[in-house]
Length: 252
Picture (tube, rainbow, N blue to C red):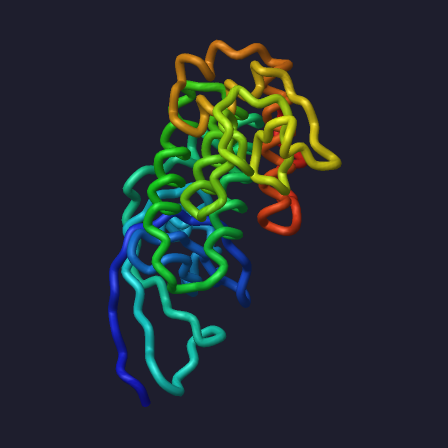
């Protein structure tokens, strides 16, 4: 039998799945261990305080117990043995439909960008914590918070889109054409079939969301924000190779 080990980490609960009568499998994006799936015992009983802490959107400090080697617990996953709430972001997210749908798309994105369990993804983790905090606080429109998170997630994973200089030749912007396959805006010389011509306002908005210029982003008209969201969704699904299920429900 391999060595038993205890480890602690803090993380955001991405999702939960039923296991047996009373247990759940909890997926978390953690600070130090990347994406972790663990079994939480007895959490589906109605009086479980432990279970209430381990709901999606919760920022928690968790202790895990894993047995190395041949001993399998619930599909060989570690056990969650303790959890403390750092911030219950779910409380103010699940009660508001626009926040809830935006938040759900964030959790799905974070999970998709951390495909390999146990691989550290510190920047993605920090982005998710910051985005959920902003979403829960209600300081900005949920769809803008979501698009900022999606753009920054693309950037930290090596797919930063360009919204000003030509993504192909680097010609200083503003450039009119936009192509998801080319990596963002492109000049007339580099234009490829299937390019679109978004409004200048939408491109300005997306640049502001990527850099965190909320003053510009918050002042944007809804029609330009909608157009921007369409570009972000197309760009994201190109790089993830399939779209996010949850983006369909996001309210604009």
